[in-house]
Image (cartoon, rainbow, N blue to C red; front, side, top):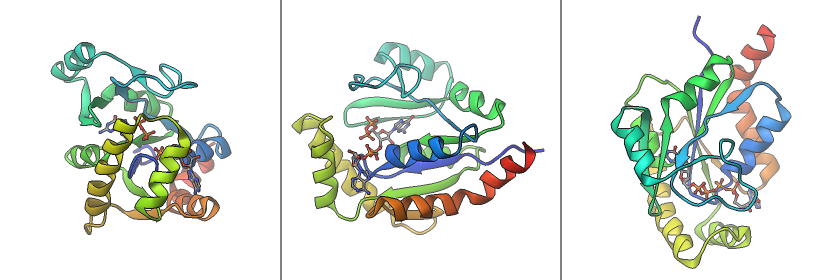
Length: 196
Ligand SMILES: Nc1nc2c(ncn2[C@@H]2O[C@H](COP(=O)(O)OP(=O)(O)O)[C@@H](O)[C@H]2O)c(=O)[nH]1
Ligand SMILES: Nc1ncnc2c1ncn2[C@@H]1O[C@H](COP(=O)(O)OP(=O)(O)O)[C@@H](O)[C@H]1O
């Protein structure tokens, strides 16, 4: 019997993906598992290696990519990011709903695989609000902030193309966005709750 469908969360940096995902995982203990990506970017204060990301070097990541260990990889804001096969298999083996947080390039690559996830885009209400949220988060240099805003413009355009996402959620009011996200995932959540 096939396991629960994975969920791909995408959308601009600063749109609120991590905030919504962390809440979803906290409110549904044992239901979701995060696909821990690899990245070459530096850890932020509070981020844990192996939990938020596998923080890696270019050389090590490239070797893994060349070995065929990744289902997709991309360069975002000058750093490498990628989803290893093991990251997904670890979660699926526990029969949990696997959540992937990937950029729009990752979405396109994953569509070429047989993963068959639910695709959800989290979007900010406007570019201005996105910029304010990113600045207030205080994680970026001016340079990386500008790169993220540039990527956000591209993301916002591509995400509105029909057929790319199963749902586009505007994260204006956090409570309402969270309810919309839960509604999208209700069937999969119930499937797991019925089994346990
Ligand atoms: N393609 C791809 N994108 C990823 C992966 N992991 C994270 N990302 C994306 O990389 C971008 C930057 O992530 P991050 O540096 O954590 O910054 P944040 O999104 O602003 O918190 C985001 O759009 C993520 O969705 C991955 O494994 N593959
Ligand atoms: N609905 C919202 N209203 C106001 N601030 C928000 C909302 N959603 C998220 N934020 C804040 O915006 C910032 C970016 O959110 P985050 O979850 O880190 O985005 P992402 O993971 O998509 O990069 C964080 O500081 C977060 O606390």
